[in-house]
Amino acid sequence: MNTTAHNSVTINTKTVLIVSLISIGYLVLSYFLIGYKSDELTLVLIFNSLFYASAVTRKFILGFSIFIVYWIIFDYMKAFPNYNFNTVHIADIYNFEKRLFGIHYKGSLLTPNEYWRANGNTVIDVMAGIFYLCWIPVPLAFATFLFFKNKKQFLKFSLTFVLVNLLGFVVYYAFPAAPPWYVQYHGLQFHPLTQGNTAGLAKFDEFFHAGVFKSIYAKGSNVFAAMPSLHSSYPVIVLYYGIKNRLGKANLFFAVVMLGIWFTAVYASHHYVLDVLAGISCASIGILLFNFLLKRSKALQHFIARYEQTIV
Image (cartoon, rainbow, N blue to C red; front, side):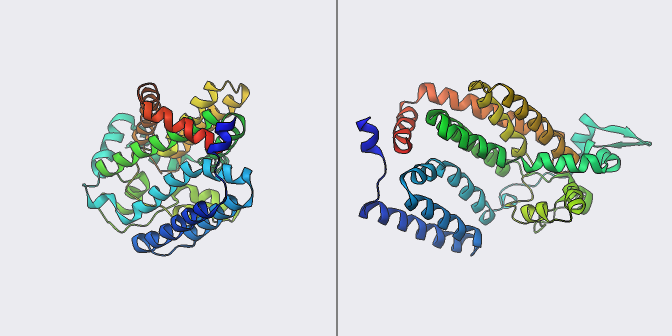
């Protein structure tokens, strides 16, 4: 108990200086890398407010700093477009998808995306949008639950989440890939400055007369990062840790959300089936790799133990 108290972060001259320097350094680096955006300032204000508000909020924001690191890395990818490092795959992945999962419809062979584009309806549009809106809120809500229930499980979930993302980012740069909607709107030619697109999710926005998905995809880091589908990875991680923590009926909810997100990724033309399978594989490999490292790496075990003491 004394060790926990000793390792808890308290407000003093040193911590104030460290937090201030990190905050200013982040804003300056962001300005030079990707230009000024209100999102960065908002993040700094939220972090500082929670850090100084109380001991409880300080522990909370320090715990969720793992997710903040992920967000910053994702945001900074804008400064280093993956199409500058490798050839973007457009026609080859489109044709491979059609070869493996093509659907014969009215005399033509269509990808599943093309089939659903021609056979969707309002009910599916609305349900698909609801499922896709769960992409980030469900993992964050689950992480919040674990934070207050079991700090060690929270840290393992958070680190697994970031590891899976890092694996996905590596693939983004090694294998840049266009999403299905890109072929629908731009054909098979490469246009590097293409902006993000809501694609099939625009129907959800139209139905509710809102710009929910439009605002989300306007902030995308890279159009040519469709494989793996990290949208498909996240619910796998949540379900895995839900089962591990024996959450009972909640896991049924997680499973439904997972299947819904997988379907929507294809239905809304944001990912091919191949991308979804790659996302599932990425999550599975990340989980296995983290568990392997957790057993073999004393440094990781020590890091988790020290981090846990900081946020208890």
